[in-house]
Image 1 (tube, rainbow, N blue to C red):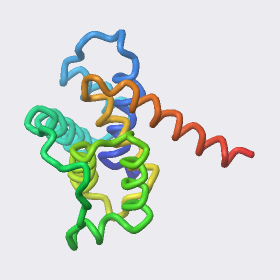
Image 2 (tube, one colour):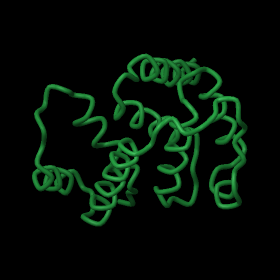
Image 3 (cartoon, rainbow, N blue to C red):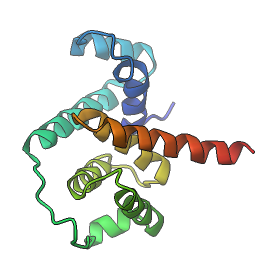
Length: 157
């Protein structure tokens, strides 16, 4: 089975984070559960590091960006985020799901996945994780969930 850091993160998000009634889980117990679920120790460690960096960035990032400014992507970002990904990120800003600060955090965390391709579905999951990790983002989180379920329903018909 070829899994990625994102697969581990998505599993964690679905199994533990969204069920808020579970008390704080020990990292060793969590790692044991993830190994039992079929994830490699290497990918689990990378996912924990990814989450630690998200928590660190949430603590140090302030609203550093001017909302009227335009985002210029550097070469690395352009290579990893194709035009549809960049357009989707811009769209999320325009409909007030992401702030410019959250956009920067999103780009940082997407690039930290170290995957060869980044797609819109991955962006959606990371946005949910970012919004969930920040207090006071319930409205944006709800809008993002609605956006995900609306777009998934379009494919079912």
